[in-house]
Length: 201
Image (cartoon, rainbow, N blue to C red; front, side, top):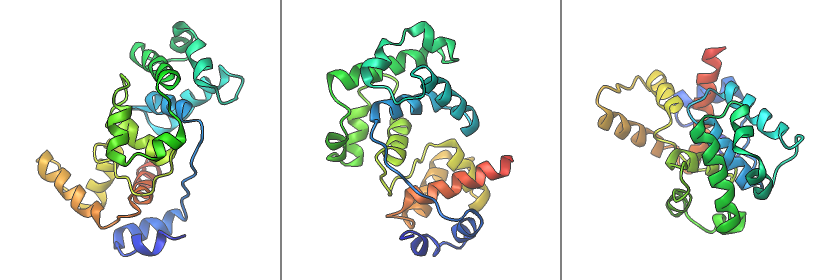
């Protein structure tokens, strides 16, 4: 894969690549649904997030829903699959935004990362982290680094022996290290998340 040689220059990442093998990023076309799933996944482990993903799709008999179908699911039904009051509202906010302003792949694809973060940030409930997850896993952008992601922070503390007592210095250290991974920072994130997931098994 095109990113392996570049990321392997970092010895610590090279070990993770050897342990985990290849990672793939596959873009998805249903941006509205994927954004809803990102909202549901906030502050949840990967395993729990997958449970919510399945419950949500079960509401549509396993098929990818349109924004209109999502908006037509009653608030009480969204609460019944375990979503919090806020997240149930955010799901409807996203579907409404998709219908009124568009979450079209071509439109979003024409925006750079920061423009897209600002555009999506006008949806109540969608912050920088959620937008970054969408860019990585739905739009397939290869050079994203989610600085505020707790899993990445924990993995980098372990792997690079970083000290997080001074938050400003800690984030500066993360940024400095991650710059060397560009233009494949998204793949580096996948290996760091993989390291965290493997340590929990």
